[in-house]
Image (cartoon, rainbow, N blue to C red):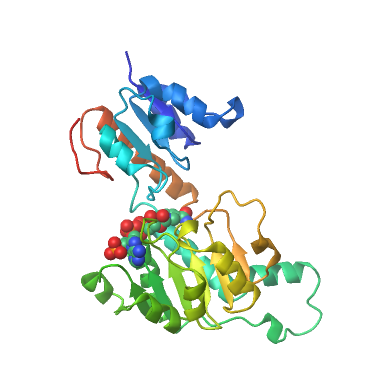
Length: 324
Ligand code: NAP
């Protein structure tokens, strides 16, 4: 009998077909009722799970009897209860690298859109407001040659730094828990304390993974350190930032603008952010291109197949144990 795989979110159609050719596949469908109840039911006799964007923890997984792997179609893994997966010896695999450049492109799009008022001026023009030569109300901030502070110089942070350094002649600052001496050399990047980075940067980009230390890393005090002309961008996770403190900083023009791809609660349906014209709000699309989403689904598929064939997946998050 073939092994059972639970698909817990929408996934590339070609990859879904490949899965169906190999396994007994059951898809979780929000239209069919409570998603967590469906997961609890389907996971009982499942061998593997694949998908993204759902909280998976003891509550909805504790009916599983033979689950070997959860293969997430994402690099971030904050949706998964790692301690519980380790305890149950369930592998968690993710999809790093294949989305790095695409997400860095989006971070740069947000920097430029927020700094140069691209989206607010687009709306302004379409509303018929362009009646004479523009004035200072339409002026933005230069990007070229400015100081770019990156919080979290990891894979994506480094790809953002490379764009800033080589493409825009920017001065690069970074903050990590540990200094990245070799990596930083490639962009002449200076290691700073968080406070130092926030107070010296013209553009600030958050690119950390969400963990106990990065939770609420940027709050009212941190916005207070930023310069009045600073542009703040978050492509990491919403919970890294105190969203109300960000709204206040934008509302009272404590900073110039922000570009956001991620939020404390997603999908974002209503928010004070929607009333502000100095923020660009995107619906968590960092990796959302045709090419990259396919590569991510394909890599997640390979991770899953590897595990179900008894091999170690290439990108294992919980590598503490390597056999069942
Ligand atoms: P990565 O290579 O693991 O980089 C994360 C970096 O954050 C590491 O260098 C880490 O270094 C640093 N970091 C972690 N906690 C920190 C803290 N408290 N203070 C300062 N630095 C900290 O991961 P990645 O591939 O670049 O991805 C980063 C994150 O981006 C993902 O985890 C995901 O949440 C998010 N992401 C979002 C999208 C989107 O669609 N918007 C797409 C892809 C990824 P240290 O451990 O040395 O501090």
